[in-house]
Amino acid sequence: HKAVGDVSPFYLYSKTSAVNIYNHNPNAKIIIILRNPVDRAFSHYLHLRRAQREPFNSFYKAVKAETHRIKDGWFWDYHYLSMGIYRPQLARYFNIFPAENIRLFSFSYLTKNLPSFLKDIFRFLDVNHNFTPPIGKKYNVSLSPKNAYIGKVFDTDNILKKLFNKLMSKNTKYFLKKYVYNTLYVRPSIDPNLKIALLKFYSQDIQNIEISYKFKFKF
Image 1 (cartoon, rainbow, N blue to C red):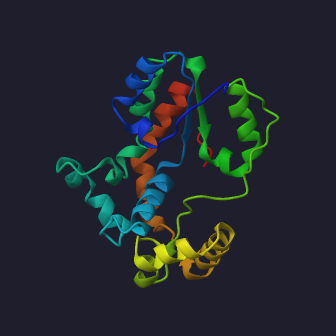
Image 2 (tube, rainbow, N blue to C red; image 1 turned 180 degrees about the horizontal axis):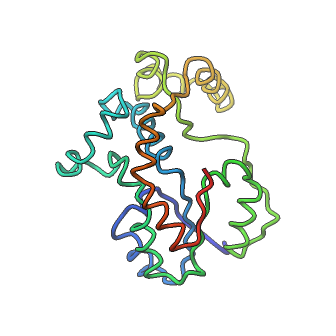
Image 3 (tube, one colour; image 1 turned 60 degrees about the horizontal axis):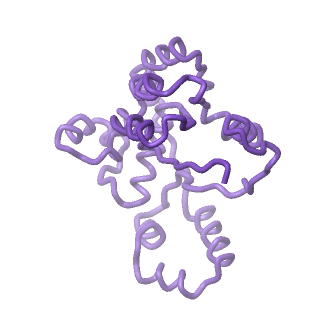
């Protein structure tokens, strides 16, 4: 392989990952995809709700509890707002790696123009930019079940789910899962007033990033 890599949403938020990556490979190329921090936090919350790991059925309540959760040592997965304060997280990488080894991308660029996004990635990595990987399938879509029972059946480990996985072919499981999510799940939306309040919360950090790194958030 000409280039190999690893990916995790935690590498940016972690206070030690940048140093650890540099110590492992000081010539590593760093790709960072920044999402609207409010959308990121809400999607993060929905992911944990779907996995039956977030007890609050209200995003507002989960956000309000964050400060106390962090003080009590809750895992980073529950740091919904903190993970969206990108400026100090970016600084950890730009303070160690040369700027030419770091590329910042907008999440909206990924979702709206995936083929061009991939070509940019491939050029940055100095690999064949004419390669076209399969891109039709979406993963970890932020949906919520219409009722709690549906979520327990399809989003947690249980005997019924294990039986389906054992008896069904890969294609059958894919089409059944697609049908279930299209008919029995909904895409929740964040309260508009809360979204405005959170955008104000992030506004200074967004301005600092745009000034420091000449990066324009496209939302």
